Image: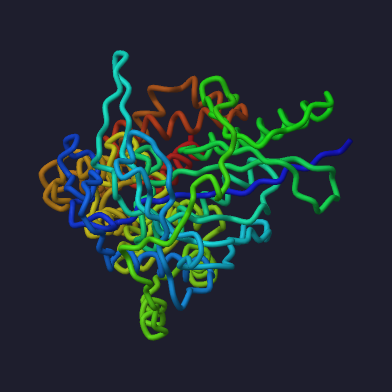
Length: 468
């Protein structure tokens, strides 16, 4: 039997707000345990929730960015279940009247993944298992979340990962979330089933919760689909269950039967009245939406003639976009700016762990090198020192005498000395070994301490060899 994978994702993202969704406690990651809490966070009887207006704004922004219809009225509901990190024994969420419905995301190949709905809810606390004990940190209890629920349109782990990456891009570009998967601010629940190829009937699905990397999402989908196919071929029945994904072992394990909506005994949240969403409010947020990643890529290709690869790299981080566009205004050279960003800048960022260069500093380095005031090697040296210690570009160049060697007599003299000392390399080049020329060029640049323009040294070297 030929099978096909059917997958839908529930992606949770924490919002970039100063305070929590229903109280005024700080929404800051990595605070000391149980310091960002109040009686409401702890579920003390008699406390009441108050909806954070910024959460509503970001939720509407998300719905619009993902091509959803924004609801004219929303309500909150209680999702009842007991767990140690949920002190109220219920979660305030949305089931019936959610903030957005019927959106979509387009993958690179043109496939459309439909979005069923987007809803707001509060996060639970965090359990910490240490030395046989379980500790509870309630700082995360009440942190605002948006859950983005896709239709079962995803057919592979690769598509699932790409879809999540697309969501991450849009959420970050719109300032909705920082989407730091390593900190849990973006995580996905994966629902997987398999069916006979060509069938339009949905089969029994399983769910794996809280996957926090693109690699884990892709592997979990493909591995679970393979497991289900194997079970069906053996004549076994797939049961609806929640499974735990073990990234180290690259496999999932059964945890418990999968809950349904009736298990949670949803009912309308009595302490938060329905909220009407005015059209003018939505239009105002829509007008303020930034240029989205796909639109930006298209503009980069049309206006700056950048390749798809260049545009993808730049648009992979909002910090790259900001640095590129601000630097470009000063250099007026898109390709050169992109090359520096994707080359030396990103390489130094990996070492430093931060994008420690301003558009002003980067543009000066690019322009000085383009105008021949400093060599390529000197430009790299200056950029490295900017990253390391934030030096002033012009002061560093003066203090270390990095200005380009313009003395043609000195260049000629240096090239002749290099040729004289490396007769073997000269002979090899004349015998047809191109690498020997590069060796002579490298030795000449080294003798000039990297302060000469490589093309000028190359030209002089070719002239001297021809005259030899």
